[in-house]
Length: 208
Image 1 (cartoon, helix red, strand yellow):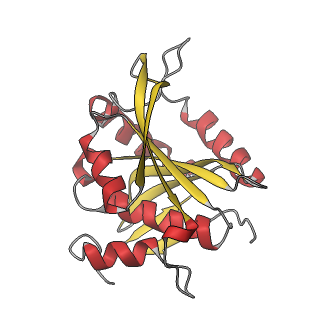
Image 2 (image 1 turned 90 degrees about the vertical axis):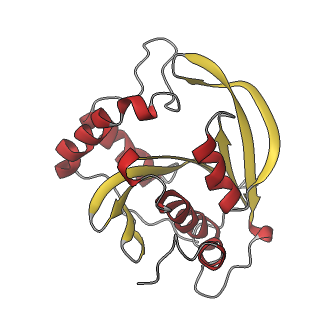
């Protein structure tokens, strides 16, 4: 169980990789174009209201946290084009061995199965390579698209956390979903969640 950074994970035309300096223009255009699309789901600072720090600070923070192994912040690409982001963090080791996932996707790429595949790739890595025991995702009850993601991945509903996260300018309730390593049949290749997703939703997971 060794933490490796920089990390790249791939499933055909879909890849997860670190945010790079040269991504700045594309990343900022993507966030600007999707501002209204993502606003209801983006965590915000209760004091200052900003959802994301400037790109330079964001990338440096990502790198620092990733090298420490406390977070795995990765962008999602399709055919080499940056279309979103997925992060595992905080990652906790020792007796807890858990990680929380968060993600967002370009509206133009939504509905094509990219987020479930990205999440499956990352969950398999967390279980097989980092020895995590539990993966958690929190979702606003109103977020139908994200609820569909956790359903596809067979994350169990565990209840509601009231006023759990500051989102879109206020403290919002979030539903909690989780998956443990024992709930996944992981093969020698380290794949379990992705294999199940591919079997159940072959149209979303083309073999390449």
